[in-house]
Image 1 (cartoon, rainbow, N blue to C red):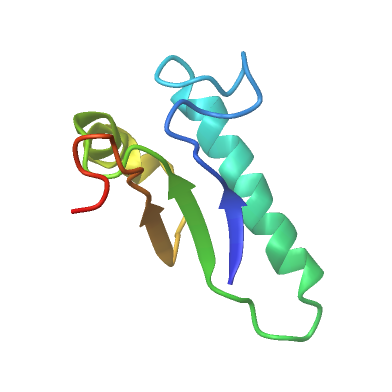
Image 2: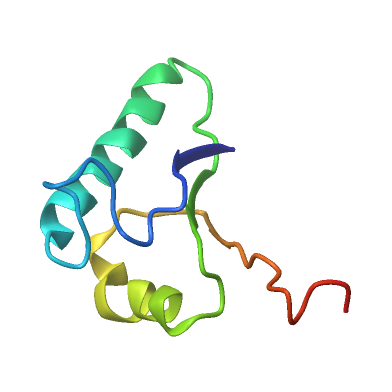
Length: 91
């Protein structure tokens, strides 16, 4: 598995890939990463592709997919990470 984006809820490579303002550029960057993975495989099968967003379970992460998920290339795994808060830590 190859991860082409880490904690990208707010985009990458600002200002061009900053979200939510520049979804088209952001999706182009993700597509380029996926294409690079494919090119690096040679004759081997392509690994699964993962994208990781932070703020898992929040409205921000939900809107990441609901509003613009169709702009992204085929992604095998979406990883949503939730950091414990002082209120939820240790529960």
